[in-house]
Image (tube, rainbow, N blue to C red; front, side, top):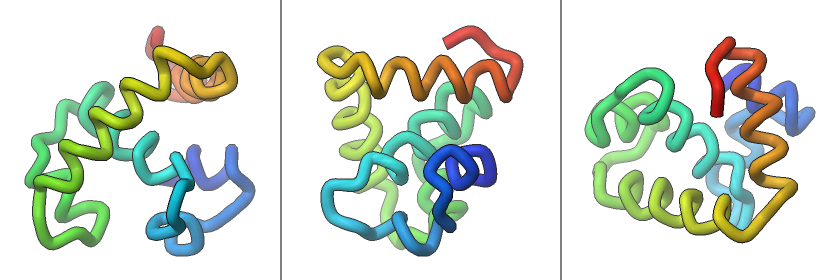
Length: 86
């Protein structure tokens, strides 16, 4: 959460539920990709009551990555912070 908060210059609770904001989807994607968390674990960590919206958010973010260079650049920047190749 913290690195995405820094990148967005905004706290998690401010962008987590904002319609159309990809910040939450990015955090969930990173949690699965880098940390290997399950959908249930991600839902609990994000304060969500169900894992299904997590799966939808991750799928949505993967699609967005395919068509958005700025999203891919953000992901590469975060990968450097986590010392992983994205």
